[in-house]
Image 1 (cartoon, rainbow, N blue to C red):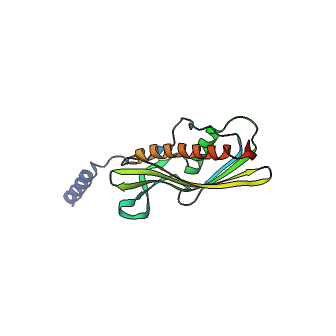
Image 2: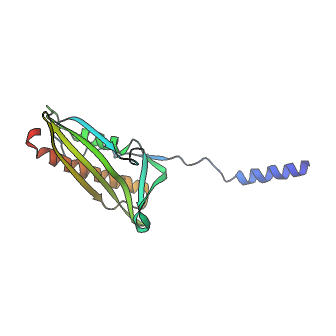
Image 3: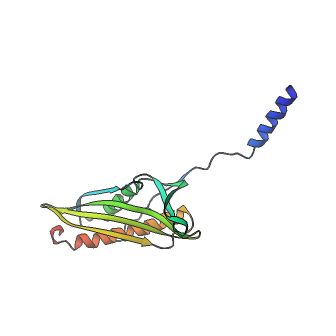
Length: 182
């Protein structure tokens, strides 16, 4: 009986020898640089995201297989929700001074889309509405795509940072074109 127990313990110990600590998830954000575009001062900046983009999971789609299937990287995540990351970039781009307008944004897509196993692009879809002292001024939607997302989460995070910078530029131009916000 002792012999069987020793053999069983040795087998279990040998089977566990290759198991080490599980890899730690990596957290990404949009970087420390402020967007290139400058926004006019804004009162409230509200950004929310539609499900499933309202969490910290980094989502991707394998368009070459099924573009309607949304998956999440298991070892990579956002440091904050995509809505909070975008809000932070909008605040970084916001100018100083008296704010006449506020913006409300809803993220509807924030993912890395793979056209093939080796090539991806960042996709952002958002809707924004602008409000002035007398109520709603304008509303607009954007679809932004940034190529060269690479084949892994880190490349997707970099491409989504560039796409977010482009989105901030689009929003800045749109706000600047509203006479009520000047």
